[in-house]
Length: 217
Image (cartoon, rainbow, N blue to C red; front, side):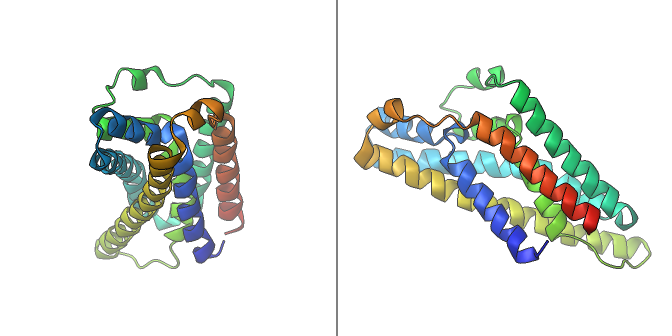
């Protein structure tokens, strides 16, 4: 797949994650309402962004090490795509909200955001895209080349995580700001978005695209 399209997908998935209430923007609204300060909204969004970014890094960086195994690049990409599809199928079958998230107090938004992204497979959704962006051509032998390759792929992983998180928090922040300043909480009770089914299907779709890209790449 074209690299520009893959980067666009990273941003698009970030926007999708940001708009999804399951990634935490209603908690930012709640924090602002409880403290009765607009600044509390932005502090909460910053905490959510930090947790989400940490979760993306935790998932993506290990794959940067795997990508250094150039001879197995295709197999790694195929395996990663199958993992993403498997996660989507699991969420499609088991639609219950992860219980561990209810045990983390909303005051610890960074930790909550980190665990929510892990539990919902948000980072896994980026793996096939990242592996496509960081795809390696002909490799040079030697440990030095492998170390250079690893450093480059880690940089790309951090960039993917950062760009995705920026798109996610801008979209979620826009939604939270609109609800807090203009729409009010009634919009949540009247038109709450349940994206669990869409989320599971999206994982399967992204995994399938990654599988196709690896197979024909």
